[in-house]
Amino acid sequence: MGRLSAASVPPPTPGPASASAVAEELVPGPVREPGVPFVEIEAVRAKEFVPAAKEALTDLIAEQGQQKLIRPVFNWAGRNSLFPLHWGLACCAIEFAAAFGARWDAERFGVVPRSSPRQCDLMIVNGTVTWKVAHKLVTLYEQMPEPKWVIAMGNCATGGGPFRTAYSVVPGVDKLVPVDVYIAGCPPRPEAMLDGILQLEKLIRERKE
Amino acid sequence: MKPEEVAGVLGPKLGDKLLGVDPFEGTAGRVRFDRSGALAMFTSARDDLGFAHLSMVGGIDWVDHREVVYALWSDGAKQYLLLSTNVPVDDPHVESASGVWPSAAWHEREAWEMVDITFDHHPDLRHLLMPDGYAFHPLLRSFKLHEPEELEVKSRHV
Image (cartoon, rainbow over all chains, first blue to last red):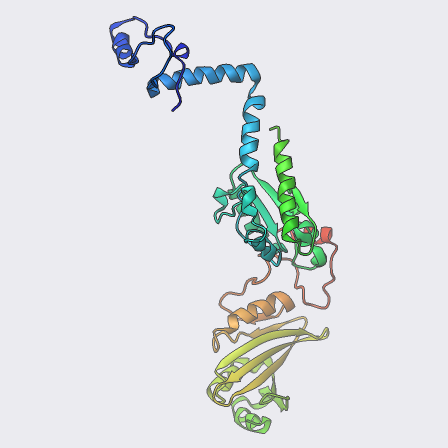
């Protein structure tokens, strides 16, 4: 825990018996003399830190606005730690897997595939979506916590691809879930997939709500 | 095993339900039988001829009628045997082979949803490759490829 300046800690005030007993517990150790350089680290107890930090943060938020202060931090953290769902539907999954291999190494962008949808904030739909798998896809999407994004990877996920008029294929995954970034290609190379992720990071950088 | 030997074994068991045994290249023959004698046909092929393995069940849409094809394999004779029966379009029923070969249940589910042939006394006849409630039998020749929007409207089952 960092050092809290003495001015932000409210001094103990005399009051009723019970309040003064509490105040005695909260008295900090060394008293700082004016003009003497501060050398030792102040030990700040949690009971003192929490109300002081809450007060300081409330003032900051009221002053600058929550959107202006908090949102860039969340966007910065979110776009640098995108966790896609680790699942594959068709041949695009091979390129998806190659992008996380040694040659392209998508992990340098903070993209780490996770096996559970509850740990993910990005769904990369990599392959042909059939009507049979459609409601599983929607279930997986609904299990992901907000905020979440969807990338349609390849022609099949974008618009059905060569199977667009087939009896079993969903003509585009945007019929089922909202899609943020479309990647063209059949299948797209790993570079194209990385480019799609960087495009998504641009979207997240400009996110306002 | 020759087609004549197959006919010699099956003839006394099936009687007039056996319509004929044709030679078919690479197999022991192609047995045509009437669908009312399907269960006797299956039992006889397994027990009397020794075709213990059912390799495939498929349906063919010939527009004026439909055909059900079974491919059997015998480990003893190292041979295939084809069975074939015709069903009319307005009443496409045939007895299920899953009581004789349990693996037939999978193939019959697929044949039912793709070519609309109903297998009587099937233990669990529901969709295999298509979602529940799918409105079409897509491998019928009367099935037309749809525009995506039209298919989406007609397939509201998600």
